[in-house]
Length: 170
Length: 145
Image (tube, rainbow over all chains, first blue to last red; front, top):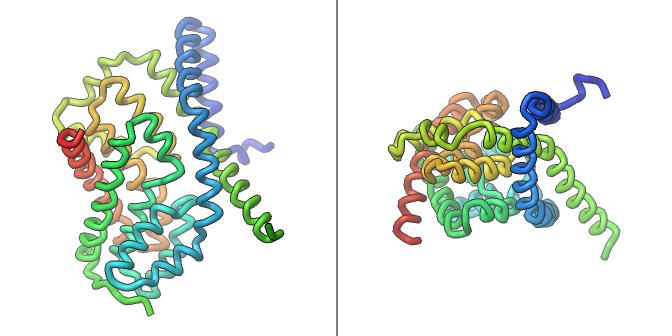
């Protein structure tokens, strides 16, 4: 493998491993304490990762861009509902959705609804088990509700700021 | 089960595995880094960054979250460990929300495809809302739980 083919993520991992190697040479006690802490975190999250993997597979199977696009064409309040649901259920990297959203914008989807969709992408159902492990289900439940509410607030504010009235999808 | 459905299931599982594999070095590196920092930096240092002022703490949390990038899993692990080090829930919440709603790294792509004005306004409002969300969430939790 050529050096330029190694992604930034792997470079990051190698850099941290290098730090540990330096630590091993100069401060062996801290090295083993760090590894012990690392082991504790890994032990805690591995079972959750299995669940995350299953949920990600299920969402990949059921939620496709075509499925989301079909439902964003709804009218009125229903449309806000589908935009929120679409944002939450959408998978893959965020930039993958930009071209689709730009296409929907040309078809009349307001900037506010696009912002609402992007905001709700922050809520990832497959990752909730891990979030609950760290923060409790009560906290995650409240956070999700507040975020969904704020996504609509952001949508309304952005519509005003962009001075674009919501348009109807033909 | 039809052949087409079989293929779709395989593709879905493959995509999930690929997604986790792409995130793997970043997650592993982050956990290693957190472990390193936990050992080398004392808890009192974390507490000293945050002043226990809800607005200032949420602003700092939102700022750190905005300039950070990566899989949300990383933010949960990092946020969880921050809590363990005595950082307040408001600051951690602002950090978590800003991490996933503000996209400084994706800003050039978002500007190019959806427009500069939209991208800047969306990210700015997301930054401000991370603070609002953090305060409201913790206030509700204080009342309900």
